[in-house]
Amino acid sequence: METLPKGTDEQIVSANKHEVGIARAKLNQISKENKMLTEMVSIMQANYTALCSQFFDLVTAISPSQKRKSRTPEIDSFNQIGGDPSEDCLFKRLREDPKPKISKVYVQTDPSDSSLVVKDEYRWRKYGQKITRDNPSPRAYYRCSFAPTCPVKKKVQRAAEDQSILVATYEGEHEHGQFSQGVGSVQSGSLPYYVSISSSCPTITLDLTQQGFWRDDGKFSRLIESTLPEFRRPVLQVEQMASMLTKDPNFRTALAAAISGGMSCHPSAQN
DNA sequence: CGATTTTGACCCGCGC
DNA sequence: GCGCGGGTCAAAATCG
Image 1: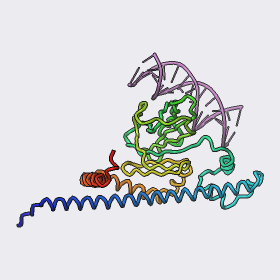
Image 2 (image 1 turned 30 degrees about the horizontal axis):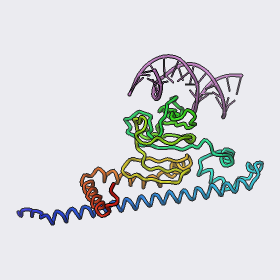
Image 3 (image 1 turned 180 degrees about the horizontal axis):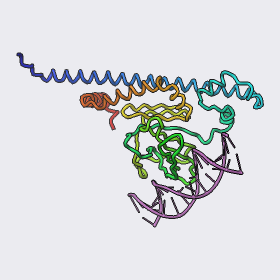
């Protein structure tokens, strides 16, 4: 039986460098996947915008009296994507100013947490709660309590198909600035703002250190839901990978070393 | 004591 | 016209 060779300082340093290399490689991989997802959503966004303008052109080209009879494949496919079965409704929404603006937020929560609270940068006052027919969990109604005149409302309800997911529906736009962090009482409840997608403001943020979250104006979520396996899988894979990595103490140590190494290369990055 | 939550009553649009 | 269901109101309770 041979005794294990004791590592010299050089060997330890070499092993650490190796770990840092692995950590960097993993980071690069995650960055690449993040970029890929961003591009995917950008492409979908562009396609959606193109379809919108195409549809608007079609709609404005035909008179309102004709529009009921002259259905085109383009209109049908648009309705399928938009998920709105009412052509009239769609027509009105495109012609009128689309107010109130509606967006949906999906928040992954602890299933044991029964609170209907979705944390965000605004302060909300609850004014009602109802049990709805399509969902056994209650729906909570909130109004923005920052300004009495602020028309924004929020509905929060657990997803019927997955009770661990909170669905917050925002209606309208705030007529005031958002709360800065630390101002006002921060509500308890779910915190997870991680993957946000907004069609009204085409920005995409993937925070891979947290759980799943996305935000949209309704159409996009329906599109995602209809093509859920294709779109959601890579997001979940990235989340799982991030979760595994962040839980691994070796990775965290190596990451800290890599970051401190990077900092020393870029002293200007320090605060 | 003011702000917020709870909860039953009420309102209103929609389908039959 | 009626009933149903989603949304809102408002008084009482609770909280900080």
